[in-house]
Length: 301
Image 1 (cartoon, rainbow, N blue to C red):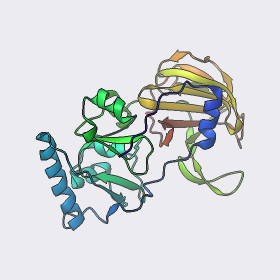
Image 2 (image 1 turned 180 degrees about the vertical axis):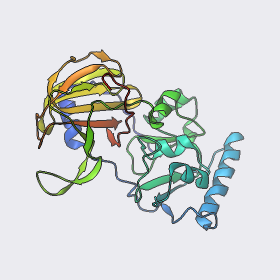
Image 3 (image 1 turned 90 degrees about the horizontal axis):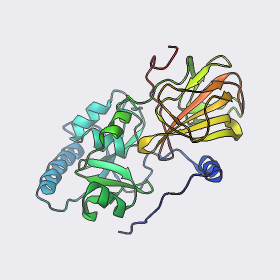
């Protein structure tokens, strides 16, 4: 097994531009050779095998022995919930949410393909050397996640409380009064009339509406950027960033630390738009996440 080390790179305008140009939404495990789970029935032999493997691996891990980690894939069905998948697979909150890049426990879409390991643990970004130190474990318990660059599954470990709060949907709040006019995911582009992936949500609101920070963090970008028009990017903990596009004017400055609910801008129609609205994105480690926002927490609502 070959591991590649990587180091953090200072953020610059050029790197941010490249970040947007090169980013693609992660494929749902288009990896050949993965075993498939066709359904979650207890009578399904694949589910039976998975549950037995999870039990065995938990026992082996408790004894300090090396486990045999195997990944499967499962296509979500219409009636599936996060909790039914968790119960049927004998996995836990942290294992399923971290390995499948879930923005929240409600980020469950029929047709989505989830990766199912046969052991509980946590998927985190980093290098094996760094992760061994941070999680006080050996390299034998760290496995590369299929289809993801620099994402590793650490067996027998859990998410930090602050990271779990993001997944539970208790961190981000709605940054402006208004209604969602365009959702996250595949949509018909209003300009090209072709289906494209929408990396955030559009919140319709009058020009000049107050925009607030969806979560506490530091402003790392403030300026003009291509289709986004006037844009603010806030960096939060645990690898999260939020983006606020099509702004009319700024009410905060670059490198300023802001708290959840602080005024940062006024909404506008700058950039590539068909009308006044706020384009809002949540990203984690560079990957777009489905925004789950708590309503009614910021000033004026």
